[in-house]
Amino acid sequence: MKITKIHHVAYRCKDAMETVKWYGKYLDMDFVLAIAEDEVPSTREPDPYMHVFLDAGGGNILAFFELPTRPPMGHDPNTPRWTQHIAFEVDSVETLLSTKAKLEADGIEVVGPTDHTLFTSIYFFDPNGHRLELAANTATPRMYEKLDEVKWAMLEEWSRTRRAPRHASWMHDGRGHPG
Image (cartoon, rainbow, N blue to C red; front, side):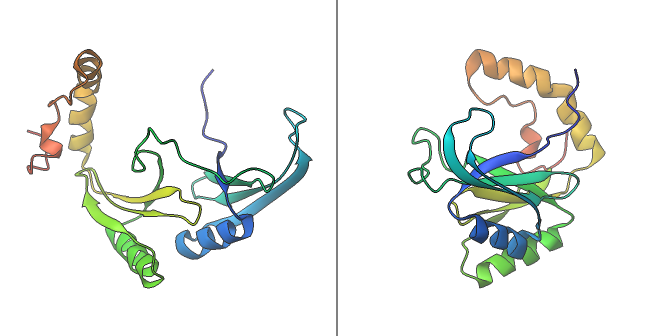
């Protein structure tokens, strides 16, 4: 078996209408589908929900569940907030910067731009508290080749030591290109 693509990724939201409008306004995602039920189809558990689907581009679908009978959603207290996020690719650094300006104009706090050598990104939170990243690719084919050459060695070293391997230190030491 070979996975062909991600069909959709689903998260919880506080308010389905607010979420659909927010993603449309700030990330230009089209609202493509709504499903509402009084019971969960897979478990038959009585639990009313609204399930909304947004077009995230390139055949990718981002979905949300509003669960009105459940307590407010929380976050794993053992996982830093920066760890769990959804990263969306944009076509250019210019698009990234114009989106940052649009978000900030409406009072949404934005971190970045951050230069990750392979891409530049900004970070912010949606109205549900989900951390989002917009990333514009800046890498060269040579960069990807060099990273491909060391990926297994890096993973094996990490598995043994739980310390950051230095195989690709060029990404963060200021050189910005493979040696």
